[in-house]
Image: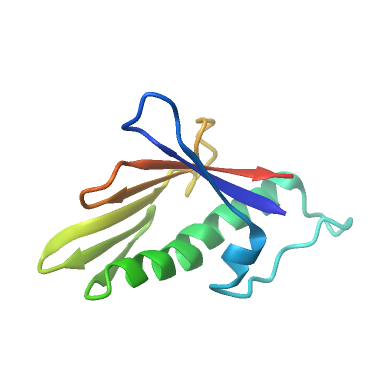
Length: 122
């Protein structure tokens, strides 16, 4: 099952947080594409997983944190606005094509370290 790792950019040693499938599934019930020979490969499943995290999971989590915010969808992710200011921004780096960076998603929250998220398949 894919897991997402988040690394803080403002510490000497990267801090990793692992979100297991139970945590992710508690916020939505995704329909995972099949890798059983119907043409779905690891790349397609990875892209689907990244998109699900950006479009479904992270908006839910961040709107719980910033309850008075309004979401503004962007082609590469979304922003949360409160009082006319951006309080959180999520950028999906691979939204149009694979960027080949060591992370796939950047999460920026007001007054918090920037998080870099890399999806991995275990």
